[in-house]
Image 1 (cartoon, one colour):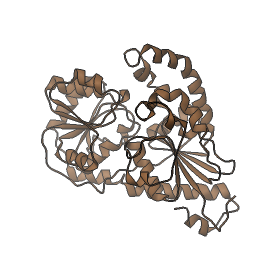
Image 2 (cartoon, helix red, strand yellow):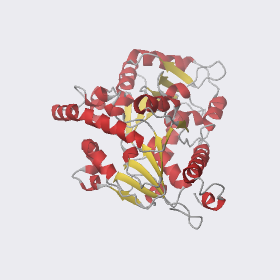
Image 3 (spheres, rainbow, N blue to C red):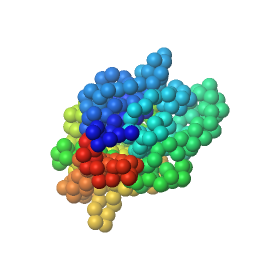
Image 4 (cartoon, rainbow, N blue to C red):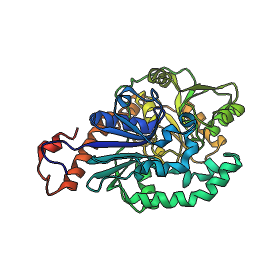
Length: 389
């Protein structure tokens, strides 16, 4: 029970802290909004995330201590539900789970408020199961284990969708998935984009760019195939389990740079002809970072890209391709090469998704839900609400 004499204790829950991707950028922004919060996670590789996150009090699960967990934590997927449920959040008044796997399943105190910011329902047990665990994607032992366990994981996933009091989706696309899979409604707050920190660039060094985790659903294989056939230069920033498979099929025009610093990535945005997005994204922060530099995006016409990659008539931010194939992607790249874009208009659009907007929207949302959760005790109690940050 809280009182006006102290602010609510806030916990932020995120699946793992092993690098700075879209989900971690959301967590970073939440840590800036709530610097007094505690951060709970299955696994933390020290030094792998931003200083803002690293300086938070970070609590990990038993996954942290399992063999080879720092690099092969995904192999412990079947243990994630038990690990997330064993995190001790006793004494916390507000819990914000950042979910793309199991975070929403955390057990919270009976009187606490639980808000789930959902990047996506667990994609690898639902619509993208075959891309992760189908033949050629996983070894026989893994396929057998997942075949036996996927039904249980899906039941757990649906059952724990009742845990949060409120869902916030990162896009209309994810809002529909939440409704279809969990029979829950969600509000939409788009994720943070460091748009204001980017600068418009008219420099074009002739390469296309991808900034992505090398995982199956991103469909990097399509981009590698398309650019290898076209003998066009493609620069790929990122790492992940698909790297060796992709290297075997890539031609000399495809460059794998690994994970780079923010400064290096921004320089690549500034010099590229455009950004490639061949997979079905939940939302997609990278395209908007590119747009903040005035660069167009070539994207598969499904998922979150439909909310950001516009083809007119009032605004054109890129080119969409309708068939998820190397040939269709190649045609879209050629169309992008010949099109005329307005860099200033593209940047203005990206600025509407800026980080400051996410932070203020989340702060206002949590405040409103907290007032409703504690009503009538806190109705009109401005002192406690003012201390939420």
